[in-house]
Structure formats: C-alpha cells, structure tokens
Length: 307
Image (cartoon, rainbow, N blue to C red):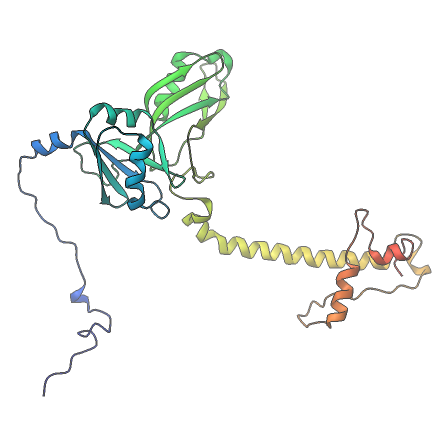
C-alpha cells in the first residue's frame, strides 16, 4: 500500500522550517563590460514616485509622446518601479533632461541619464525650478541666490531679476522636499523664506513627500484609531454639556424669576443607553433646534418664555 502524503507535502499546510526559501548569493565573474557601458551612454533611467497609481505599462508609450521625440526611443520596464528609454540622438536626450520635471497620472516621474552605478536608490535626482519667496529685497544678490540653490541640492541654473528670484536645482526625489528655510545673516538677524516648486504635482503637503498623499501615509494609519477615539470622547463630552445647558436654560427661561412660573421640560434622550419612543425622539429633536438668537421654537411660540 503506497504511503499517504502529509498535508505539507500536498501543499495544504504551512511549510516546515527546513523548506523556507533563502536568498542565494552569487559571486560575479570578472568581465569586460566597457562595450555595454558605451552602448548604454544614450539611455535615460526613470522611476515612478507612486507605483500604486503609476503603471509602467501605460507610462512607457505615453512619455515619448509628451517629449515630442523625432528619433526612435525604445522603452522597457526594469522592475521595482523603474524603467529605461534608449534614444538614438544625444541632442534629444539632453533636451528631455533640460525640459523636466515630468509627471504621469498626476504624480512626479524621476528621470536621469544612465550611469554605471549599482544602487537601489538610483535614479533619485529630479530637477525643479524653485521660486524663492520672502527673501529681503536688499539681499536679492547673485551670491545669495546661488548659495540658497547649492544648499538645496545641485545647482543647475538661476534667475535673478527685479521681480523674480529662482533657482534650478537637482534634488533627491526620494526624500521630503524642503519648502521652508531660515536665512541667517552676519548681523545676527534671521529671515524665513518659502520655496515654491514649479510643475509640482501630487504630494503629501504636510511631510512634502512625492510618494503618497496624506490619506495613504503609513504614519497616519497608525495614529488614526487613537485620534478617532479622542474625537469620539470630545464629541460625547460636548453632547452631554449641550444637553445640560439646554435643560438648565429651559428651566431658567428668558424672562422673570424661575420660581414665579410653572415649567415643563422637553424630554431629552436618555443617557443610560435605553431607547426612547420614536414620537418622543422627534419632539425632543424639534425642540432642541434654535435660531440665530438662541431661541427654540417652543420659546418663540410662547413669546420668548419656556413653559
């Protein structure tokens, strides 16, 4: 009689520890790759900033149309949210880099010239024209503007006119953008400046991340339950205070001494968790409504008195 297979052998149960997969290490041989390095010199490497919203298969045919390339450009998916384009003409490749930044599906796209490097963070550099707001007018100097650009990243260009100060900078698109900075002057004075990124699409405006919105932030997902509990407690507390104030106001009335009148208090929703009859609930809800002067319908009916 043949041996019966176990659940693990049939694939119906958890794998045993000795069957867990491990990453294998492979020693690369010594090779001459100089020809490949030369061949890939006219290659652009790109990365999407939000892989959940940007699909590589849709991006590859869309970007060349946006770039208005005259020559042939071959694109391919490199995995891990990265892609490449090979161009036939050096001048077109440079034009693409000069006219950045680019976006797809309302999220930014990182585009860099290929380099023979091995790094999980390549490509990461994205160029932005950044307008400098809040710099005192008597410091609108070329040295000052260039110093700000160099502190933000790799300075590519700058523009300084009577009405505009801006810099073109390569920044790390995998890190939060810098939106504010404090300028420290020799006199000991300080000035807060604001940085406005041109052609900037979707991003998390609080943390300045290019990879997700506030609703998708991992930090928010951890904090949301506690925040909701606190909000529920505050709402419940406010509701109890409102009921107490309404009840007290109804007893006190708007005019005269409370002991000189007979009072009839509108029934309020019970606080012990028991339900009220539907008719009483509707009546209570109606009498809780007040106008701009804080007067309820019952008080208006009785000339401003709660009876």
